[in-house]
Image (cartoon, rainbow, N blue to C red; front, side):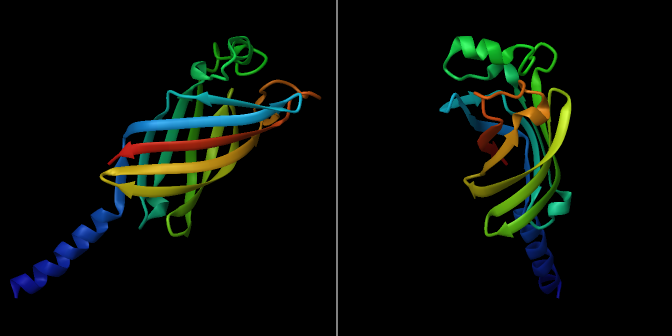
Length: 178
């Protein structure tokens, strides 16, 4: 009788923990952005990702993702342009050294595809963005990949310009240890 009772409880415990993922150690992150300046594509990266990820596929309402990146790490492979972007007219890294992302909700689309609604804060301006992402897991590591676009003017990054595009595409590829 006791074995019949313990087996279902053991299965429930194993099944529930199999869907609970708490990630606090980001092991790899690649964040890339792209825009156009004078019609020419400009690529760059930003690093220094720190994240607190609590992901539970069986209970997305209890899942959360909070992350920040260090704006001082912004790199376009052009030191003059990078210095300009770090300045007051664009990212103003002296007063706003970090960009913040905090989940509002996460929903399942299909398979390992999700959409997160996030508050994105740049230069003390917060706007909601939807970020579709995939989550894959292997060997105790979860990999998150997502892409989204923002309008740089919504965050006070530069001013309206005939040569600099307003739209910026952002790609995130990050891995975290369970």
